[in-house]
Length: 426
Image 1 (cartoon, rainbow, N blue to C red):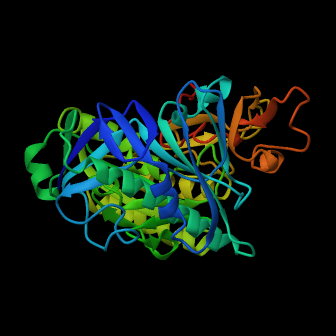
Image 2: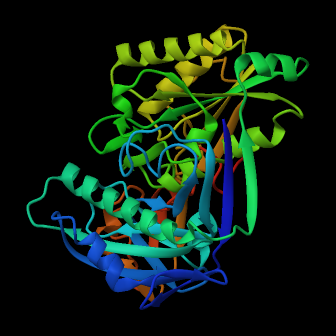
């Protein structure tokens, strides 16, 4: 499959009486966006705001982050199976509003929602302090169930991202990048001397409000399967979960997965990037065994020399991660795992809930339990009310001077297990 991503560089967002893109500025008709959001009967109130890098702004509780895009040619549309009909994506051309993002916030759904600071020490830990953000702050109607609330806000973010992406349909990109995969047979013929490497991406799927969607299907309902990496870059995988903010993969990260980017960069040079295997994370032992067995079998089927395995979340998913690692290694395939650590605030506790000697090549995204003090900022988009309840917060963590003490766990993307962050360790 061959996918062209046409980047339209966005360096600012401004409100206007007309939505358009000119000279790198995304002009947004605020009233039109708010009317679009209120089409959903589950949403009671909405307010749209802008948060720019360097501004004294805090966004919390953050639900999802989405990059605006539009399918220009090739099969399918944006976010297939959810916004568009279920056609295969990953080919043709997609235009990207690079440097911008849609961030959803509002009344808290689950305690595992995060913080994005646009300036100060907190901004150093989240990639979304560097994007120009259109923030959609919406609250649901009274009496709504948590899963309905999550669904409504998720759809709001996707719809707004599609609305903005459509503005770029007929624009000439500032840059075009091309990504192409080949068949298994073609790979053997074109790169006979290069190691065959695949990426195994574990998708969060461990219960209500812990969902990830593949072409609109909850990942709980899938078995490990093959997928083209260009499909993931083109909106086939969406976030729908409320896991801890530090290592949650927002939809933005699925569209811009650094593991996929880096493997493509080395494809045909130091390795043959064979493709991707997606698998779920499970609650029950039998399901963990089934998925990890199947994942290892697919790795063997592809005649891999190496595999990279990433997880989403911590604790219970560590078991799935280690199972995948040791079973793939048992097939004679060199395996690297990407995780983060919950090693206690002093860093001296056991980092993962599970371990095995086969997991001897590990990349870490940092210690999520590390304490940090966030300064008082001039403006909050959303609400500080749940700041002591979100994962990484604690009782009386709002100090007298207005600063906030939290673990890195509370900051969106701080210990990303895809490498969308600035932390690691040797």
